[in-house]
Image 1 (spheres, rainbow, N blue to C red):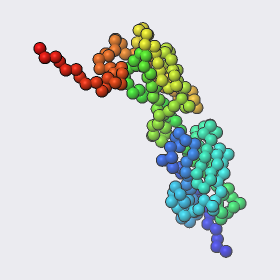
Image 2: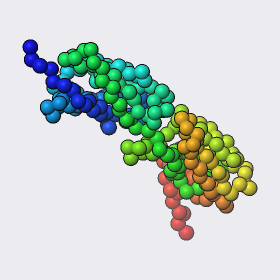
Image 3: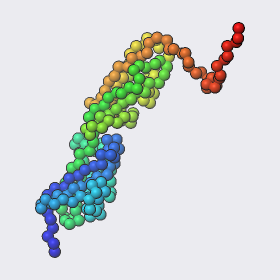
Image 4: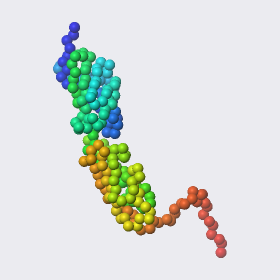
Length: 218
């Protein structure tokens, strides 16, 4: 019988293209290092030859099937989004290896407005972006942040003040990450002052097809 090689380390990796910053599923892979310094990697993400049918992966914070990890983001939050994986290899089924995988997590949020000022009576979209430890930035919706304003009305992710409001000059808004209230952002939005220029405003779609009127000859 061939002597089993001793495993000295198992490193886990996730697919950086799977947007695990937003979604709770990602392909993963393992790199197994043996005592003689040789290495083997799993098939799939790491393009190795160690088949997933030859190992078993368990986790108290999710489940892994054929190299696809589904994790519970709320459960891994207390350990700074590090998930524990229990790996059993076919060559030594009586030994379970404890492997930790650091998954992406939010480090901050910010407002990134599409316009410099808000117009009365028109919806103003509150664009909130999440900054992650991976260096990536993604837009966040109201499933992930709560929005607050000192005046006006928040409708979904839009801010609206009445067209009749002639007093408000600035609106203070705040976004708070639902997963951690310590992660928040604030912004002061100017309200456009003065009457709107209605020149060129199309009130009826038929106006688009109207031919310009000809001047009468004198």
